[in-house]
Length: 89
Image: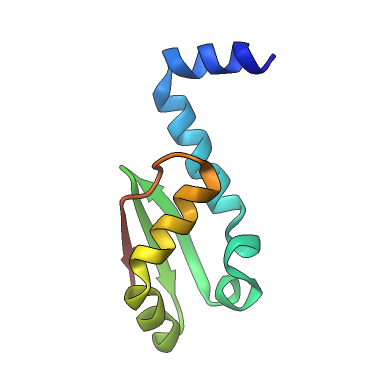
């Protein structure tokens, strides 16, 4: 079954990308913790750019300062490059 999925996603890399994007969005609370999730009002990924709406200015600044570490954490979680940039509003 695993080999079959590897072949399928090898033929359709855009579907694998979309699945990994959805995995990050759905796992945001477990990845970042309940405090960050509580202040996140919008999260989506488009063209490898993670878009976040954060309601706390302090948290927004922290996320921007730690942007590179966050990108690495999210990509490590998926095992491939899903996010290359982060936009925080």
